[in-house]
Length: 245
Ligand SMILES: [Zn+2]
Image 1 (cartoon, rainbow, N blue to C red):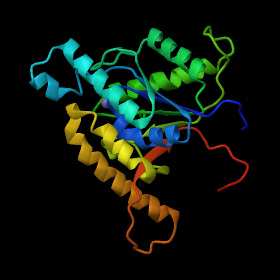
Image 2 (cartoon, rainbow, N blue to C red):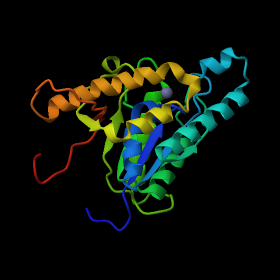
Image 3 (cartoon, helix red, strand yellow):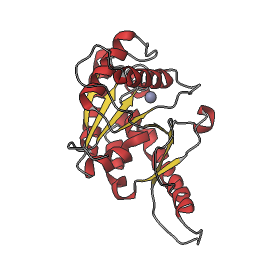
């Protein structure tokens, strides 16, 4: 697995805020290792995840501009680059053109790891739609005959990040990522999103709970105090290894 280029993380997010709540720690860790971290937002979450701005009487174009700026600030706080495809939300409509744009991003970025939404979310159809397009584009980008610039993609592992109501989305964590060293950066990124201020403490509390579970799975349960913060993920494809660990 030696490579001349540094590792690259690609995060495909339905709405402007999703990558912050669910994967901000992973993104900050990758950026902190000097890796390229790229976030693709398929929409701004302008219709479905901007209730505060609608209540304040903002127009659609104003809301998109607000959410773009917030997400840019959050990405900068995490050390990531960000691209908006402005495909619309509620509903986010799956189209061959949008999948093709994602294929071209895969071919350009050549990610070593891909993060996206789980495939089920009965509360929000945009999230599984984003996941389906992210996965379809990954498969197409692997095809030698697919007509897009760049080389055929390898087989980057795909991790689903944690949905808002995991039990309803068939989300059972099988990876717990220690984000303790970068949690302050994640919190700062969350605070770049005042449109969704109600989420800041919710996702701080979630990181504490996942941190407790991380410690329980990392060693004996001695009941000692700790400040571990975690993020939960599910792997879509099998882990490939020559040593079980
Ligand atoms: Zn969302």
